[in-house]
Image (cartoon, rainbow, N blue to C red; front, side, top):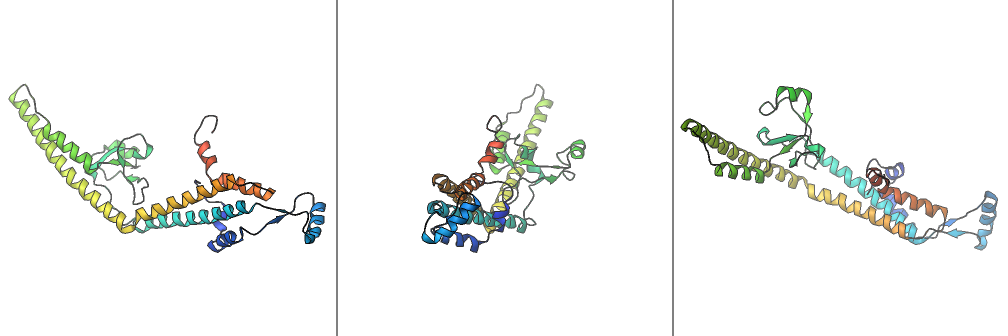
Length: 267
């Protein structure tokens, strides 16, 4: 699957163009090969049906399907981006009491990172997070993405708080541990309420916006692109134009980007 910006040919292609390509895919494509002189002679003799070479119709049909699939993928991604913009002002920030470790977008922390309605990492202003962040951290990190406590995590934390057994060598120490347990339970109960409310509201907005359907459309388009690239790779090319189509399909498949990011000899 292709990542990154679309190619010029892809952005310029319209749906009518793509459908026209598919309709014409089964028609023979006369392509003359050789030197200009030979091409001229071949074209002149083509009236008699000689010295012309037709591209594989299966390859042309697969290429037309690839163009249609890439167009659909672009439109699906645009629709998903529009959805994110449309709901940005309605999407709630997670309560500060639910925020966990920072740098959740770096893949170095476990848990659920705070994301927008379509699942992109959210970098939020740290200057207002005075309950849990030191002034020095806020100064060095003006924005950060945080892990958000889920209702399941909050429930587990509450259970741990309730099962905690206070211990102390003196009555004063024991009383302090008991007070700590009560405070821990109260905080955990409050976090559980907030986590459930946050989950309910974000779920409601995702359903109202049709996020799952929009993502499924993108996924289906990606699959169609992949299938078309596979069909192109399996169809024989009879002309230089066919070889160009195969090269374009290899690029569209995303294999170059995948290997470049893998490191090692393949990268």
